[in-house]
Image (cartoon, rainbow, N blue to C red; front, top):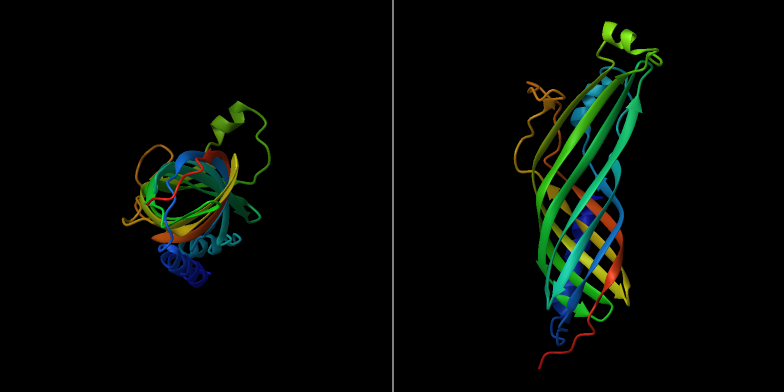
Length: 231
């Protein structure tokens, strides 16, 4: 799958290069929208720890929902986006929920600016993080007094770190709506520092991948000016 994403980005760049000889359109306007994202996450470190407790493995296809907004100024594109999604796995006595979320500022320069097709290499700068929640499956707690006698039914750890995201963004404007396809790689250049729910450090947390490829499909609302060709 990673090879497929790399190949798609290379083909997009090659296509963009071939059409640069055409006169570029001057654009103005913007879009905002939302849609699903699928990230291809290497959960090996987490799955190794879960397997020791006979807990099911996390799926490497991690689905999320998100949204964003973008302004087009001539061929410069600026905006931002956010996303988040979770999945749960369990054993006979435990349930583990893993949530991944983040947000970023994005900027780029459109290499292809056709009427109904805009291709833009972009760079996202922001942050992302994991939250892992562990819950005992011991049935419902009857009252607050019982909880005080046996606390610790739920535990959680989390981290958030700086993220760099190179990506290719294809925008297809159709009047006041549009479609958008994004493919890229979210890279975290520093090792995560896991923290407990009370803010204290977890000395040895599970290993996580430095980054993951992803694909996003958005439905957009807004519009671009008709534009004109430069002389």
